[in-house]
Length: 314
Image (cartoon, rainbow, N blue to C red; front, side, top):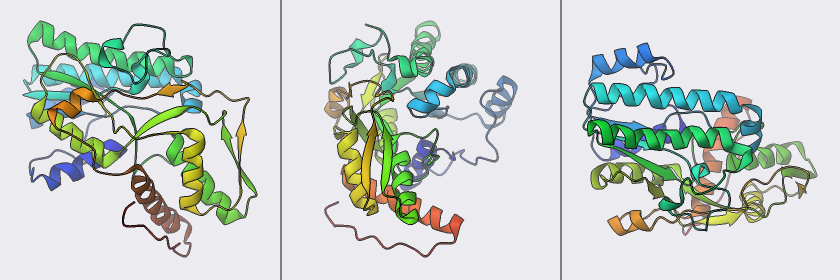
């Protein structure tokens, strides 16, 4: 569990007192290899499975690697769910993506609007793979009675995220760009698109808590949205990160690059009705993520630590 959400899940399960957690990355199988996955389930016989693995990335990565993203995610879904069924796990939760929703569906997006229209072209291959995972959960439930459920999260971020400049999602990409621009004394940072798209974000630790909550409280065939209700335009997000990183330069938007969906917000009324609500304010989550990034960046580059004051109210 060395992925963003996997690591957050491990922290949450340990906080909850769960002791028998199979989470050592050195012992985990290659999930794209059916033989390795089968052997892992045969050896360990897990009772509950959180299927949160898979390849993902920002707009640039989705445009560069559509075949890789689609193939990898399809293989992971198929191999893990087949072994989970064969070895009779009590319950499996699969995390899809808000990219699964149609490009022009009403906002905020409700679960029943899946497959009601064309997908956003910039991440279509990835979205198709994630939709297939949702439908595979339902197919195993229909044919075999397997208790497989699907969650659709908002854009997750936090400590342990992918901060690569080329392929990461918007928050880690902006944090790294502005941190390095500050260190180098750059006069501006360039960001893809117009800055106008509206996005909903969820802190990885909140998402992990929601996954455990859903495992305990949700058993329906239909997918369930897992959102925070906290959203920002890309422009406002960039300004918030500029302030948090203390980057003094200018932010410039490259209007020749794709924006993706204009608005992408989740209606998480179903989850809220069950009693779950996020704990972490968006600004505080951004600060915590930047602090983690700084510590790793400083360690890797032998910098002097950069002090950052955190307001108690986030």
